[in-house]
Amino acid sequence: MVKRRRRTGRTQQYENPTYLDLIARVAHHARVTREALDLSQEEAADRCGMDTRVYQRVEAAEGNVTFTTLARLCNGLRIDGARLLRPVRRSRKRP
Image (cartoon, one colour):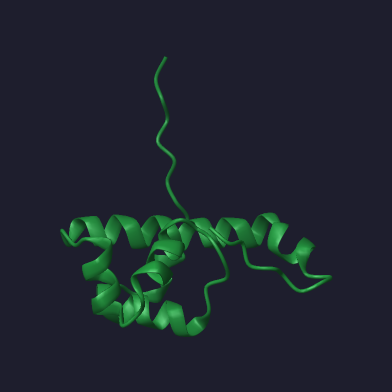
């Protein structure tokens, strides 16, 4: 896989904990919603009007998610934008 180059000077932006947390939230909720709808990634991508690889990158928390992509996810998966950005509940593992 070819890794895209980021613009010089933006490396810190993409390593920022807040940015990483938001990307992880979108990835998690997109995956959970897709699975609840019993869709493959290909089917979800088609419903969202995006290439399958773009959808896979969203679920893998790779790359920058634009507002256009967020809107497509909301429309295709029939999910509210606020729900996509909701904090992820971490389950506690019992000893």
